[in-house]
Length: 237
Image (tube, rainbow, N blue to C red; front, side, top):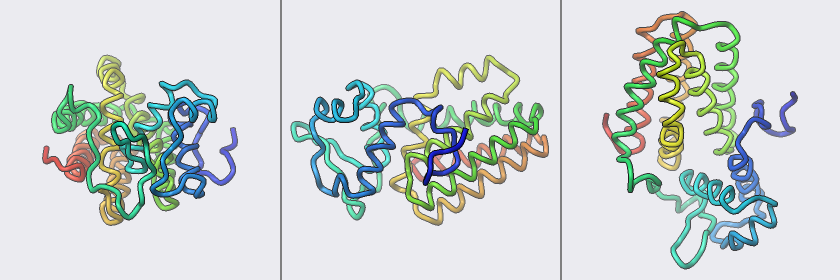
């Protein structure tokens, strides 16, 4: 299946509908159809315009808000952020239920072990998938496509979980996916070019350990990556 013209090489048709809508709204912002400081149409009007259910639209808007592209103000509506005024830190959408630092600590335990187990079971097809995701992660960041950038990050981590032979552990990962995904979006507005260069290198180190089928190195590299991501989000774990 060929990728859509002008976009990084990922399998877009597999993206959940809220991500597709988030991407469309991001494109409207990037092309100037929605301008910095502009108030978005009401959710009812916007859902009709995009031909999508309102819950799906709300999920897409939450994604864009976490990425620092829009801001919702109580009783006023949702506005496109001026890139120059994006916050250094966006709000944690699950703050009423789960502490962000706790989620990062849980990622250390779960993803570190998943990565170690996946290393021992690594096959060429998975390695190819991981390299594709890593390239898309890099290219999307360089082109300013934050939605595709995060989708590639999620795809990379998901492919590692899919390769884990311990299906109970993989199921635990799947059950926490909504929390884990959000911690991968959360640091984006506070990520400078140097940190992103490091993150790209960290993905490369994880992939090298997996290719070499080295469980100890895979665990260590994944945990280093999660610790650095947490630090970018304002937490030491």
